[in-house]
Image: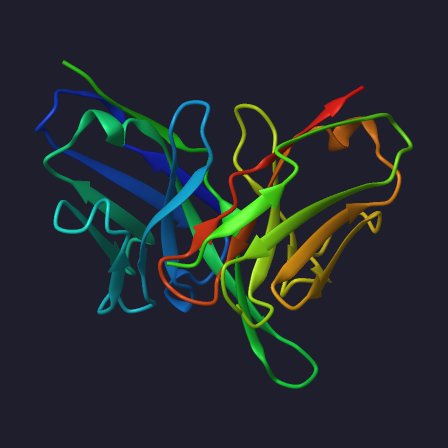
Length: 126
Length: 107
């Protein structure tokens, strides 16, 4: 059974740092890209970062670029989001998600977020 | 960035109704569109990917279609467990973006 379990959320002051972790199990972790998505209270979903299978390639939303760093440890089946210079508008539930993929009958590749963690709440407040 | 505009934002319907939610992309996304269902306090759940492919385990009353840059999610006969918020997502290019959501409520 695929499981993603986030940890590391909490309350932090503006300008502070937090490190979120997502522990994966039930699949070959090194086969899948991984993502972080966040959801501010009462708001919609926002993609914020992704890391490829070997950890050498990353992408970020403009809103977190230069402040957040995604990484992964394939030996320990963990993806991490280091969050620095936190702002009040970073307050949200943070989800990690697995990038699943498949091929249609013509060989066309498609990806999607097929498994999600339960989320961890980050509150940035003075 | 590719913008996704969902409509309606709120939808009130009854058990047994057929409902349709629309998602319009600001540019072509080559069928790289997924639909998710989210219930309060829970993580999103994948329903459909590649615009029209039903994820394993998802009831067949859910279906997706596309016409150019307009995508639709249909639920053929609403069940009590279907009342939730639905999001579309484009995976054609980074940054991946989501629609603003459609909240489906019981009439």
